[in-house]
Image 1 (cartoon, rainbow, N blue to C red):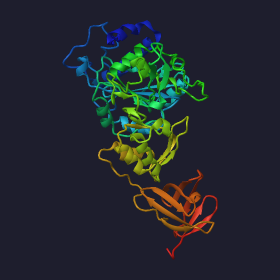
Image 2: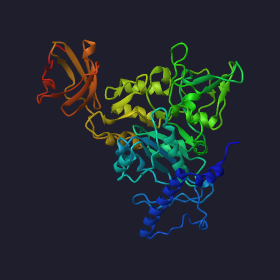
Image 3: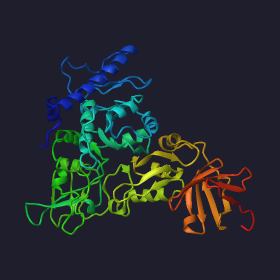
Image 4: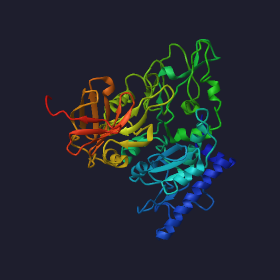
Length: 498
């Protein structure tokens, strides 16, 4: 039987790293308590229960007071686990900052820090990260541990888990631990995400298609194969699995060698591919999976979206974070591919396609895409460029506040009507080009493939990207009869023979 919560609690004092996390929790309590004393409010954790006796504090019975803006102080209480308000722990793995911080601040503004959510950040560059987030009290930056891309991001992920488990105190069995990248954005209101995630006590793994799983021979018999399902890094762990990951954090760090990942096979192709963070948590929580040729279903405890199907070449499990991958990694027809298609056809969205090594990257959101994300089953989306913008005159922050976080959706004062330059134009090759527009997005359609483009408009200006990848802009003349391009070319408008 796996060690329980008590085993992890007893193990905490034995390591310096765990002690550091405990001190972080104590420091947060002291800061919050100081704020409470200044406010004149009582220091009791909960009116129905007295605080523990002095010296009784440990990682799992601590009540952590939190003051959020002008809201009344609330606490994680000393109630039994099933009576504690469940919260989501947002575990940010970043380099030196959280991109689009203002959007995250807007999102978290609807929650109560320390009660409904806790946001913890691990950065590759801790000093720069602390500097960048010093004016963002919603985020707690933890001491950095050594990490390396692909070979060991797991150490940073588990440092986040350990700190969150300590800060959560006794916690609730419905607590959820959500791994988030610095290029991720939420695509639902806070209350919706929290309610969805804390509705059960199982973990959410987004499992890649069967062809992406690692597979090695097993010593138990020639007809048995050891498999390791490959999963997206940005998973959601239950409290039970988070504590188990913390307890087993020193195990399986040689998993890439065990699974022979990224090694040339005898047929000069790649047999098993991937990174440690795409295998470690599943393999460590569920241990080795041994299958025989006639086995098609693998039942798993506390696993949402199961059982696993060993013959399914689509995405399995539960995927909370949208990300576009190439077909071999994304499957053919599922929620990910359907949403990726919706973003691709939106003229106002700029989605750079995925490569064999990297996922697609969103550089601009159109209004149609924000609606599609809001209506999709996904709670988060990545990979969002640090310079990503909104298709129209509004900032991306205002667009998310209006179209994503408000319930019901609220239209911003945007480019609702057609762009004044909508119509037929003549390019410098004397060919006709149509310009259509809607809700801030614009699309150009020429007679030749290389004269087709999409982009956005704001006022008299359009910015577009041609199918070739060439980006440029144009400004409409005051009389709306000429289109002046950035390279000096001028297109006249067609006013007859339409």
